[in-house]
Length: 211
Image (cartoon, rainbow, N blue to C red; front, side):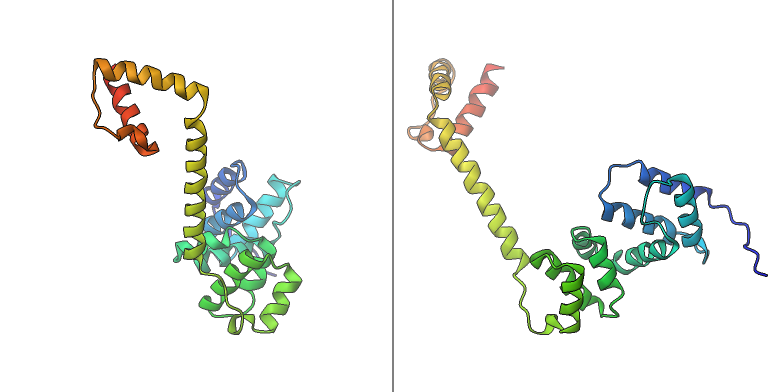
């Protein structure tokens, strides 16, 4: 008959409680629990954590001993690669489990994590793609290009909003106020107010002068 050795898990339980009351996404919560459990050297830590969660939070689902082991393994697998860990947070738990248990090299796992983000694969589609070795034939878009596109798009939208504001009656009235202060305090070079950037810089100088 096996008798479980008594272990003080008070610190682990406190860490779990802190995560459970935080407003975290599912993946952030699962990764956090995986981190807390992985800090314990005891072989039975995952089972103890699962039992504690089921008793303390009976309405919460997904905390079987098997899932707690997966959470621990997920954290241990990706903890040394912050960029990849961030990618992991952006796909679903089910897809992460499929990739984690696919017996693939870390680099290939990374490919399927990014592919799930790009194509939105379901569990079944992901299993099919892994079986077909999609990473050997499918080309993913460059994340750096995507990031640059997002930045450029955000900049364009900001410029559109600024230009739209420059032609409102409220802004024109504000410009009259600026001209008043310019005559009293400042004399900007010719053309300084001919561009949005110049207007912004001049406005800042006026406000500093008026305080």
